[in-house]
Length: 355
Image 1 (tube, rainbow, N blue to C red):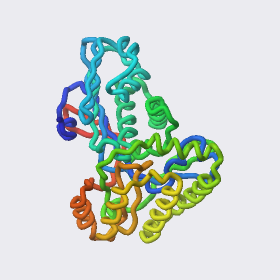
Image 2: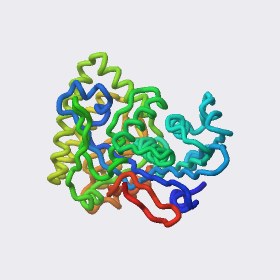
Image 3: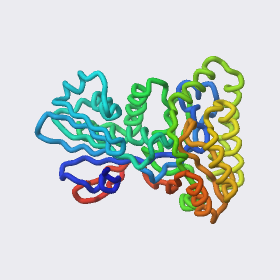
């Protein structure tokens, strides 16, 4: 299978190549699904972009054939023309096909995707890929679309794909990188950078994959339905999650790490109360191993049920925690904050161009 570095370097002079980072959510997830945040004044999400990327490469050619190839998923399909793609009833690479259906590019091309994220990791690999693929198709078709509109397109098409409501916070790390507050307000969504030392973040967090994919749409949909149906416990928990997210943004900005640890533990407790299926015996075991080796707090990324766990660790204990997780069957992933978001790469020159 083609590695991600090989995907980036396997070039054609006229190819369009875009990548975007995945994310780990620190507080305020699920509430970013419209209209839940409208019922909780001050709602916000806090997340961090990861230097774990998803990418899309489009190579135009003179024939009319369209090839859609996912290197990480091992999927490939071909259509004689755009009309054939539009007429198809199902797709092997649905994410790419749905976006092609929206942009309707003229002429033939090969659209290839790749992701450094494990399947079902809960770190929004699909959202990062949606941003990268949307931006690449916009460039292919010559459409001048600002980055916020790219987010709207990606979010709406992803909702078509998974057939349940989607939140907005996952796209902002892919768009901008860094550590973000995503404010969810009546007059719109806005993102602010949290001015925390990214080098300090790199030393204080560990990310690991449990080896079991999660199904975020299902878990989030169940919580969404409970909230809309007026479940008082779920509504009350989200009120508390909003307060935690607000405090998390402030604690990170002033680098009060003990408070960050406390807030992550509090949010994880509330999320488990909202959706007991968010954790599993495997997740519980790996979290305990992490705690025994220097982790101070931990939570599942995304909607849980599998996927990744992010942990705040004692400074200097990162390697020890990662080694212990590996020995117990988990897969540590490199935690590094992505300093930027969406990138276009000048393929033929091996040059990266920040958007």
